[in-house]
Image 1: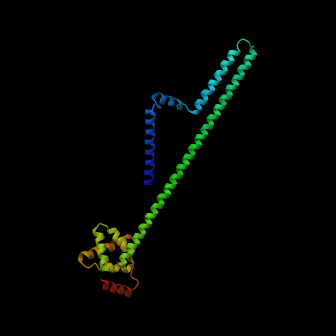
Image 2: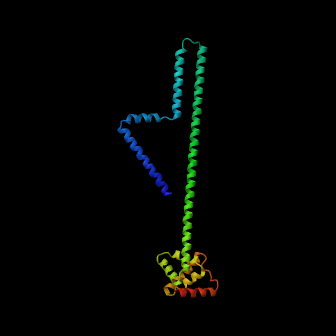
Image 3: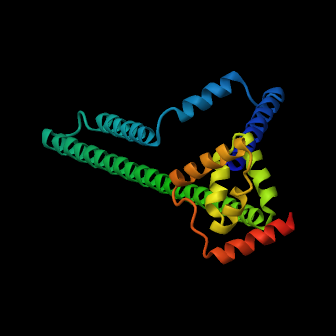
Length: 239
């Protein structure tokens, strides 16, 4: 996810620099000034609905003024009443039209907002899926590496396996050593633990056995004494 945000930030900065350079060129060549900036601000200050309402009001006012110029003296009271009624009807129609346009713009805004929200949710779902896939891939690789390490421990001579476990404990990775012992076959783990012979090593072996029991399964019993003796003989020969 971090590379994606880095790319987005890079393109945003590039576009911002390009916009600043374009504005500087416009200013230097006389195509842009403070007055023009104020005029542009005044143009975009009112919304489209407000501009339409103002135009409609100006149009209605112009109609009323034109009617007032023609109506006054030559028309009877009934005719004046008819003209005013017609003007009121026109104003009502204009008001209704403006209301409809306002409602249409509101619906369009709501639809746009809903589409943006849907796209954001889709992006979040895609990002979460990518993160989960990445995490699963990391866990799979970690499991494969762990299994490969366990197989290497099982294939080593017992004395060398003991030295590696002692090195792990000395490096502060006692939990890792217990995890390797737990994942090994009972025969391979027993062969390595039997190599702990000095008083200090026996204390460490006892602690590892106790942690194995707390870890979960503990050591499994060898399949048969004959198999265990044969494995010990093979291990001593390898030493």
